[in-house]
Image (cartoon, rainbow, N blue to C red; front, side, top):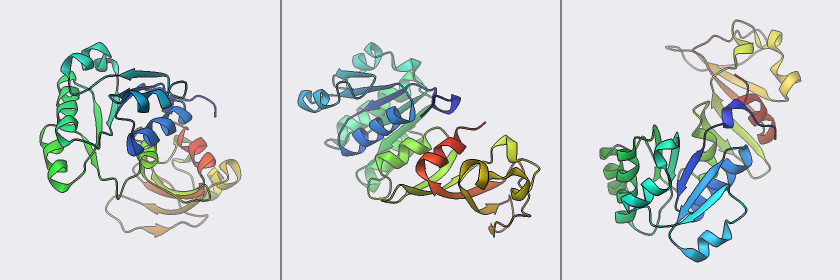
Length: 222
């Protein structure tokens, strides 16, 4: 996949278990430069050569956050699942570092409330949010993302600039990108199913369906 501005941000992923590892690999595939931090040496070794850089360290230690220069990252994901204490300490360290967008896995409603109170911007629950799904949401262009087993996905997204002020027939998204606009949600109005004459405006949200690779191509458009 070609590099685009949508995937320019460096991403820090702390904890490379099932959730964090899936998010890290998907972000790397999308074109991000990913730094993975994992305290377990054997697990960290599994990601060597698969991510931009791997650091074996405990992110609950504030000094480690300084060592990896966390302040330089625009996005961080905390995937620690073995210890609520380690997760909360790592989150507090990232909040203190001033990272603009912090995502964290919560293992319980109580854990989620703590993460929110200390300043984590987006708290996700593994039973509802997979690491791959979060990887597609951290950029902010996709508002929601559901992927099926056959590589097909449905997403909620802001419209690309090239569609603004035009009907779907005029912008020809289907013939250009191979995806289908299923519906449009305008501010203050009910969801409506899309027809060729549906006009797309700046504040609209699009519900788009298609192959993951084709949706990624559309999402990369400004």
